[in-house]
Image 1 (spheres, rainbow, N blue to C red):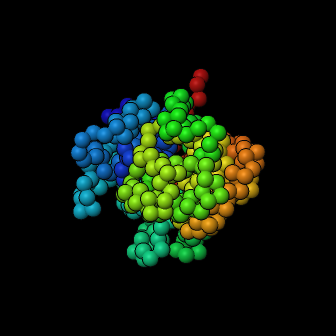
Image 2 (image 1 turned 120 degrees about the vertical axis):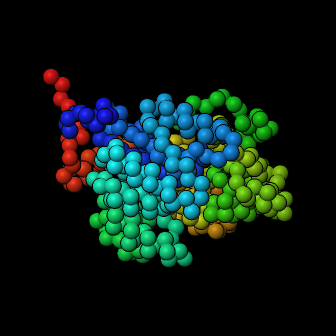
Image 3 (image 1 turned 90 degrees about the vertical axis):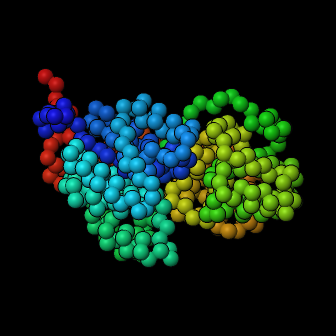
Amino acid sequence: MDRLASLKPSQRRTRVVTLIDSAGSYGGAENLALSIATNLDPERLESTLCISRWPPPGPVEAATRETVERVRAAGVRLVGLDRRGKVDVWVWGRLLRLLRRERIDVLHTHKFGSNVWGTLLGRAAGVPVVIAHEHSWEYERRPIRRILDRQLIARCADLLIAVSREDQKRMVEIEGIPPARTLFVPNGIAEAEPTSGRDVRAELGIEPMTPVIGSVGSLFPVKSFDVLLRAAALLIRERPDVQILIAGGGPQYETLLKLARELRVDGSVRLLGRRNDVPDVLRALDIAVCCSRSEGSPLSVIEYMQAGLPVVATAVGGVPDLIESGVQGLLVAPDDPPALARALAELLADPERARIMGIHARERQRAEFDLEVLVHRLEDLYDELLARRGARFDPRPAARA
């Protein structure tokens, strides 16, 4: 028999399974789920990270090794279901058996696919508390997803977490989910890794006094880096000295390179590809940009704030929960290159104002959007829901004599 299972109810820790579809990638939701699972208090909580598409196919990549190292270092158990495709429904039986055999107390699922299967199987296994965590509301023109969200996930889960107030509002007003079954919990990030000391400006041949604008993110259409390129074409008419850095890989890399040449901004815009030294890249910037047309609660913006950068961002999704326009940066409408160019020019023209915005951004991130703050909120939520459910045991550690 498992040693912990043999303990008296008041002695054993709360058993939490974090379920995510994949890991070893650079996706914000995947990294956040991994960070939560590996930072839960080990004195109170026994954490298991369950990844349905694990181990990943093909050769072992650096990101995969990093995932394993992080999990092991935190003393967290890693369980893979070895799911290869949507038709591999049978693998979910492994999760059902795990939940029953281990007598899991809390199942915390992340993103739509894991939310569907996790909430269904969590209830079938008799898990006392099931929480579904949605990282971005993306159900427009997807009626089946909206039905599953309302009729399955919201009904089977104790709570459906939204990462922005806008997402929570859409869940209630558009999907018809009862407000009491939703909860807004803002994202948080860990303290930044120390920079390597690499001088990215020197590496790229950029002079120390040259103004540098930058953005970090995967090169997908929703991130609208084409809008940043079009804004750059307008901005450099007024500020020909400006340099713009875009760090990230993705399917639009070649398309954006071509557009930069067509707009004749390829001398001012650098597409750096995927970087493993993001803190060094951020240290090279004067202003950070998020130009997405849709977002949940972007971790990139929180990283900009942590780095003490003023942020020019589109007022979409949860971005207004992070940036108060005129305080930590400036907000503009999405898909509007002239508005983005004007906001950037405004901050470039007033470096002192931009510097103060960066200070305010750092202060707010530390107070509200820190990983430790997020994890404590979730730990308290687990305890609250277990108590509300009439938990089978006291989740607090046994008192010492």
